[in-house]
Image (cartoon, rainbow, N blue to C red; front, side, top):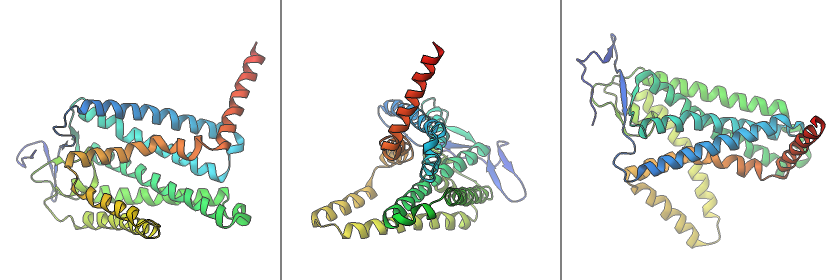
Amino acid sequence: QVFCNSTLPTSIFNSTFVRPAEFYLGGFYNIPHVKYYYVFLCFVYIMTVLGNGFLLSVIYLVKTLHSPKYIIVFNLAFTDLCGSTALIPKLLDTFLLNRRYIVYEACLAHMFFVLLFGGIQSWTLVTMAYDRLIAICFPLRYHSIITTKSVVVILLCCWMFLVGIMATSAGFINRLSFCSSIEIKSFFCDHGPIYQLACNDKSYSYILATCAVRVVLVSYVCIAIALSRTISREERLRALETSVLTSYIHPNARIINSSLTFTVPSLLNPIIYSLKTEEVRNAIKKLCRRAKMRKINAK
């Protein structure tokens, strides 16, 4: 473990708190051939930037896509792009170049942005699900319920709520003292591994983290209810066995799984929710025809 000595000048003191000058990121420790995984993450980041950047450009340039549904898709693509940019380059710099120490203030900023964009990604998908629910259940009232104004209000509320939550999380971390270990057992400055290092009262951070876990558990309960309605008993047992097995994953495997959870969805979202749809394909064809006409006119 990595420890900080409270007598060293690298620690920052005031009347109440003890803060280290730096944290140490301890993820991806002693994994054979891990550089191949970093190359994979680099590829994922490049494709994520290209895919989401292309989708943002198509939605911006084609006026037929200026609809409430594609405002949600635009927000998702923007969030995926920002979330991957907040996480992957820093991850590669930390572990590929072996720069595992991160300045205290930079660590809090890193935590804020990674968790913010991760949260907004989830709530944007919830908003997208709400849009599809209205379209399926109330098709005749869809255009009166799902308007540009209503979608913008929903997305702005998501942004403001999550910015407030993440700022509160960072504020609670900033009120903690770190007297011994400064090793964060994660691949980024994650909220849980940071506050667990504190040596003073961390109840506020614990309550906040517990509330977040309970929200996740509610989603798992919904999944369990859906599983209970499946026809095949074998499929239910297989799904439950998979959930049980995930509790016994090796710490390194768990970190790799978590990093994939943070990075791969941003790569796949534009393909799953947008680029495969007929509307977007037609918009891309329209842009191609427009580009050809410009070339012809230029000649």
